[in-house]
Length: 197
Image (tube, rainbow, N blue to C red; front, side):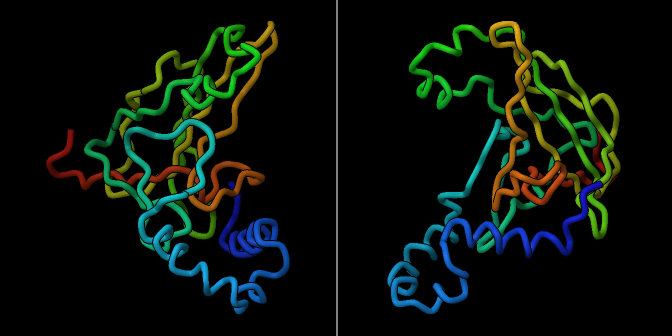
């Protein structure tokens, strides 16, 4: 289990320092900050510019709250939801593939992991499946009702006979250097027991 309750604010400060240079608090008071504030406000409110890496979810979708650092817990309609995500290679991968590397990949499979959220830690692994050949997966076991979960997906493939793996899908304030699960994983919440399959 990766703990983040105390490390997340420290990690966020490191990310801000990398992106904005000198300590962020000094820059917040600068005239330049206040000139760009209206644009930043629009980006935060609309969710535009949310950093994303890896394969992005289609169901449950990623949704970000106003001024949120990470995604919301999106309600799913079942205790055994069918998770869906982008196909690999993505269109953006194809657009950047000037040397034709993608034509040499084979044996593409997907790996999905789900973690039950827990106090003071990112979560406990409750579901893992690998070697999935399609960009969706109906869970083979029921999850707990009225519970919050983190999840992520990544692709595995062979390139010139060597195994390769892309990074885990994440969104929000990216904690790419952290192990999964971490707060940047996708999120969903299961429904209550009544009226559910």
